[in-house]
Image (cartoon, rainbow, N blue to C red):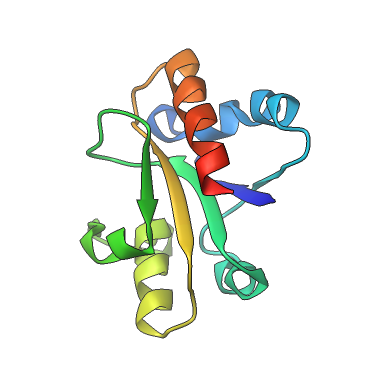
Length: 129
């Protein structure tokens, strides 16, 4: 299974998924964890089959599983430049165009510690497979 891991290493509140990559790869050696930019090739990934994503999600208190049914509820932040287009925006666009099917997002709260995040992700990965 291929799992796309998103985040921004330059922003502390958005870097936790990327920090966990080595631990995830070690714990789940049969899974392919790929550092991924949500604005580069998400449509192509969706063509390969169901999307499984790990990313930071604002407004949650614990590691949570979101699906394609949650895409309409994702909030869009204000956009001033192309740097402001994020996963939520891209998912909404691809869903509106009918270009994505099944989506599983393992969302991590922005300020969660690594140990709690890892435990939450671990509990959801088998359910996401």
